[in-house]
Length: 80
Image (cartoon, rainbow, N blue to C red):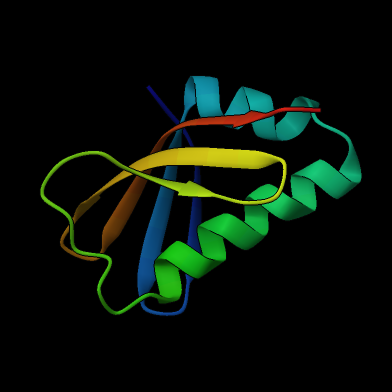
């Protein structure tokens, strides 16, 4: 189930329910790190991956897949 849709540059970012729940329940600094990861993935010209991929920050990570100009964030998490 899709909960949140964002636009970053030319890419549309969709977060499914569990990922959006985590995004809304983390502290502000962790929230910022997740948004930074999503932005980095959306701005990467090599982002086209055929299967789920992951991006990692200092404390957080996200799992995503890409369909055309849509990045679907499947899961996010933090070690804090």
